[in-house]
Image 1 (tube, one colour):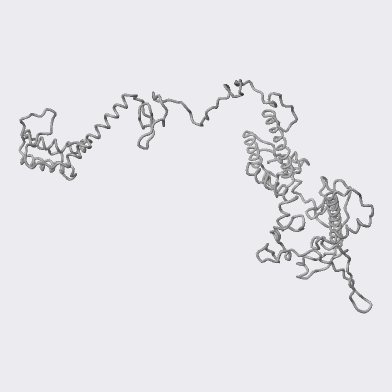
Image 2 (cartoon, one colour; image 1 turned 180 degrees about the horizontal axis):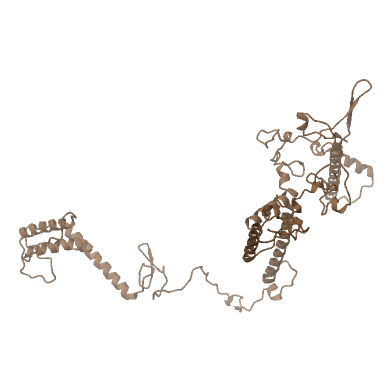
Length: 516
């Protein structure tokens, strides 16, 4: 049987606890005994046998499951009254109830026993006493009195400033003149800002006939209804069913002169904001693995939140002290050294007779964020020191490839020769295309490096060999032909050899476009 303790258990202790529970259920081990000496049924589920955390139960017990209301000395609420339950008690919560302390027992409320109809049960003003509105009137009277006092002080202040500007040397001795000037200034105050300085009195109307009568105390509605503050149809929305207006009806008005800023104003100020922070802390703590729930255990959640704020303040102060210890605090009144105050340094500067700086004030070149004067791959200049044909390169070898190896002057000469050869080949090709081809004449062989001077080929046989070579190459590309059946022919004529060489040169040579 699991106890009410919430202490941490290791895996081995948890396994032993499960084995003990199974043995008790099977009857192999004696049942667990509570603090009163009674045996606890091992088949009771854990959620029923475990006591709540706020009871601080050290031993297993089932007192929290028993019917406490059967006790004749039991009181429903914590204050001692018998007319309401502890849930609906309006007294301040006590650490120990009146049942246990027998001190400060609250009296029972007077409950009026009468039945209400359908509308009476749903009347939101049921039980409202109109006489309580007198306190609202007193509060508004006090506010108006404070406003009048503030306006008078402002008028007196303006009068004193006006007298100081005019440099009045003699003081006004006649008090009547001061009072007249003050009355004139008060008359100039805008009536919209005075907010009705008239005294509010109760109005009582007596109605009835014969010997009986009814006295009705009607409250004066001096405060403007929230839906009348701004009559614009596009202003804040007013819900007539709940009588709520969430947005501010006058967002552009002076906040010191308006007394209503929307229902949302109360949700982001005062204790509502603190309650919101408490809920957010409970959610975040629950997501991180802590057993905390705002609705199930509000007292525990509030206590953990207070401890969290204390620990957070300590960490902030510790971090602040560490930063101030490491970097110092410019707001302190520590005396700076004279070297910093007078701007002295150990840098030597020389001047001539005319006062011009001779040495010591050389201007330093600005440094970039990239590494400077770093030479790689045997280069003697940096990348970007040479520019040609819209390309950057190295000045030492005139190469435009960033990761190339420096070849020096030899590389520059080789590059120039290659460029000259390229230009010559291009010019030769252009010239060959412009020259007409002779219809008759000898065609020398193009195969081999050593060409005999007396070699002459038959033009007709050479044309047939070229056609035959084209046919052979076409058959090689055709996948449907059987290529493994090869015919052996050791009698190759000069024309066939020349045709093979011509086709091979024009198809395989990458420099074929530069040949004539």
